Image (cartoon, rainbow, N blue to C red; front, side, top):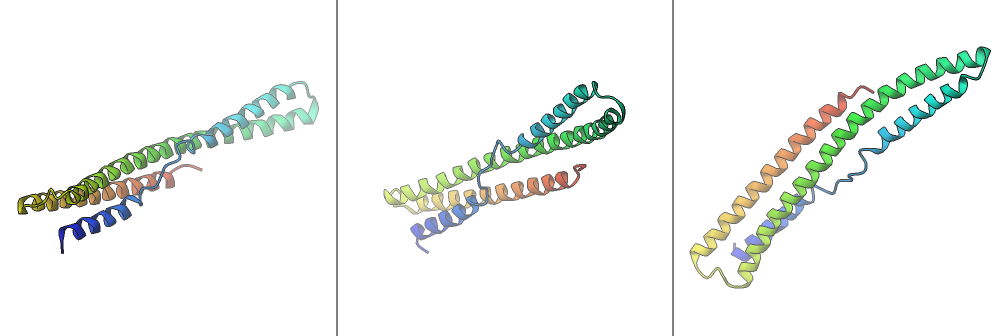
Length: 162
């Protein structure tokens, strides 16, 4: 296979691999825990207002508020833990995407070298082939590492106490 075809094929494979990483939404992690904290505050405020009530209404609301407050506090803690794990996942995706883009940049540089006839010698062609081989290995290691991190995060998410 001619070297330009090899470089193009490697570039295509690495582009497909790069597409596995997507883009993370950094704001997704905090929203639910904040909303649950707001709900807990609303119940706490309701308890303060219920202090002026008398009889069964006061007792009923107090029981409701205690149960709801405890449940929302627990859920808020779980959501906060989830938020931290989602943020870690978003950071990992961002880092992996950046590393993958660097790999694509190396292949682009090899392609540019071919376009400028820098590879007129067998030694130069061998250097490009070795660089491509190294980048494919780097991308494969990146995919394996990211896959292991995803499996670990999945296990952690299954362990959250909802």
